[in-house]
Image (cartoon, rainbow, N blue to C red):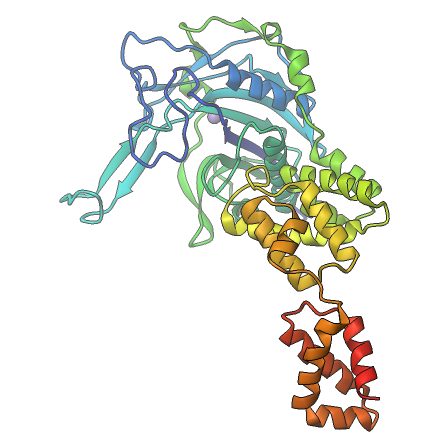
Length: 476
Ligand code: MN
C-alpha cells in the first residue's frame, strides 16, 4: 500500500514597519533590552483603542498582488480569544472571515488566504539558578517588545506533496517577501515562522510547529510523514493534534490536542469597523511590485547568457542582481566586447566576500557598478593583473574611489616596462643556476619556473608575456 502525503503550510511573517500594528510603539526586532518598545495600547491596558497601521495593510496588499490573489473589497479585524502569558490583551486582533487577500498561487501551490494580525510577546524560560536572577524555582520572564508587531499569515491549500516541495515553496516565498521589501523573513531570527499540516491519504491532519529553519521544514515534515505511515501500517489511528519539532532529537513531540476555530470564540473587533480596501491606492501598490524572481531568472538567463546556477546566485539577492545589471550596462558602454563572465566572477566571489565580511548590503556598500565595470576594463587591457585587481577592489570597497585612481596612487598596475623588468630578471638568473642550466638543456618548465620566481619578486605585477620574452632573450 502506498501512502499519498498531503501537506498545507501556514506561514507567519513579521512585517518591517516603523511602528507596531495598532499603536505607535517602535517595531524593532533587534531591540535587545526587554519591555522598552511598549505602550498602554500594545500592553492591553483598559480604555485604550487600537489604530490600524496603514503601512502594514499596504504591505499585505502588495504581497497579495504579487502572488496573484484577490484583494477583498471589504475587510475587517476580529478578536481571537485565548489565554497565554505572552498575550497581554487576552486576545489577538486577527482576521477571521474577511481576510485582506483571498486566493493566489506560488509554485503551482494554491493559496487559501493572506491575513493580517498582531504578534505576541516572547517568553524566556529559565531553569533554576541559571537565569538573570537566582530563583529558587524554574521561572519564565516575559518581553512584550514583540507584542503587537504586524504579522502577516499566509495559508496554502493542501497542494504540497512532499517535504522537498514544502521547502522549495518556503524558500521562494522568503525571496518574494524580500523582493517586496515587506519582511526580512529570516527564519533563524523568527521573522518567518512555518507550521505544516501533514496527513496521509487525506486522513487525520497533524499540525507540526517549532520549525525554525528551512532544513527543519524538510526534516520535520519527512519525520512526521514517516511516523504517520508507521501508525497506519500497524492499523492504528493518527490523532488530531499539534506536535512540536524537536531539533535535537529529530522527532515530533505531542504538544496538545488541536484546537478548532470555535475554541477561539472569534468575534468582530468592536473597536475597529470594517473598511474598504479601495481607500488604499491599489494602482500605486501594483506599480510598486518589482520584477519577481521567477521572471528575473528567465530574463537573466536569456539576456546575459548565464547558466541556471549562476542566475540563481544573482537572483537570490535583489540588490546584488540590480548591481550586476547596472554594472553590465556600464561595461557595455565602455566596450561591448568586455567579458560579462569576468564581471560575474569578480562580483559574486571577491566583492560578495568583502560585503559578507563587512556585514553590509550592496546598497550600503561604497562601491558602485560603474567602478566595478571600470576595473574589469583595466583587467581586460592588461593594465592590472589579478592580484593587483583584488587589492584595488578591496580599496574600492573601503573608500568608494575610482579603480584607476587607486591603481596609480597605490602603484598596483602591471609592470610591462622592459627596463623595470630587466633588473629582476638578472637577479633571478643569478640566483637560479640550476633552472638556468636545465632550461639551456631544453627543459621548458624551467622557463615557467623562472617567470614565476620573477613574478613573486614583483609582487604579482610583472607582465608575464614580457617577462617570458625577456628571459628567452637573456638566456640565448
Ligand atoms: Mn496566526
